[in-house]
Image 1: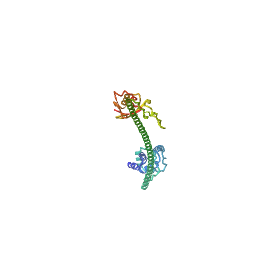
Image 2: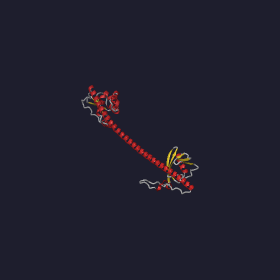
Image 3: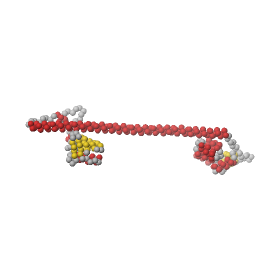
Image 4: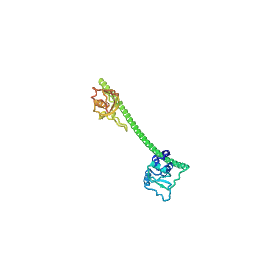
Length: 315
């Protein structure tokens, strides 16, 4: 079979190995097409096994008076109309075992060749179409799996974001409540200090004038007033063993609890260890107080009046 016939088979879409096998087993385009059509449902392994089995079977010898009308290859079973075709087949396949046959091989007409080619093209197109449909279905399944995976991942991310937002909102609310409570305690302390100074001034005045000192007002004894239903009375500062400090530094805010017996020097060392900054003073806005290193840092938090909580600016 000429190389151009092999190219024709490849152009028609046949597998290279099958086309090559058809070339080795036949001596023309007609035979190659017939062989491919005959074996299109078989796998290459099945074809190779069949060839090994057929090669061991030899055709019957010519009887007396019979005339050889064709040649047959005992190795692959292919029949040829002429000696030239058999020799060409031998040169392509390296088959050497041939025998004569009385069977006459009628050549295909041009119309039959065209019909055979068209039939093979249609079968090949149907096969490709079937594969194309299967590939499309596979792509659809893969796309559905990908979309489901993407949606699950997105839902998980959104759920985590919602939880984180809720957590942050709760932390902000708690921080705001603590700030309001701290401000309320500061206002109460300022009022108590003002009342204490007023009473002290009146007492000193009464002593100078030689009369009895005035009685303390109800404001100085808030613990004696009955508590409203559902409210919790605050403990005196001496009852606390810990205090909560809100420390505002140049690099951010720190909220920590300390023992009331810890010194301001201990608080400064804690900030320096955590933030890596040197602390020289603490400033309290309400009431206004400044605690300087080397002067006030030996005081305990209880002595400094920073119980049960306080807000300090760190410098």
